[in-house]
Length: 101
Image 1 (tube, rainbow, N blue to C red):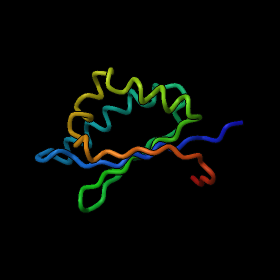
Image 2 (image 1 turned 135 degrees about the vertical axis):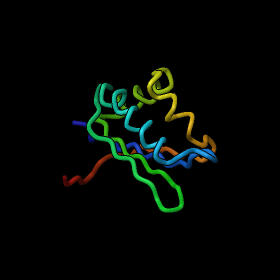
Image 3 (image 1 turned 30 degrees about the vertical axis):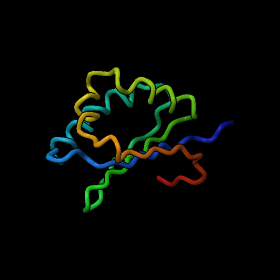
Image 4 (image 1 turned 90 degrees about the vertical axis):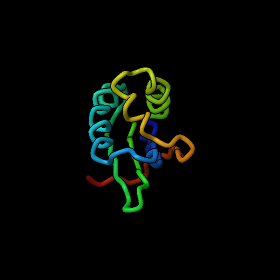
């Protein structure tokens, strides 16, 4: 059985983007993410200096790639995506080894 995949995305917001408004757009995006096949969990956090870190757990790499391929097509995701400084984005996929909830 394949291990779950953790998608980790780090990014910064574009200059002038309001943190509270961005958080609301992130919540609105939950409808897309939770509707994707293979979704397990999502967490979004930020550091004091404005680095955002998103962790999404997927059942497998196929689910992670399918969700990423469709993210821009969903209207509800556009405010979230538009607020992100594109050159600051990094994304990695790793296999989950240990999880405690």
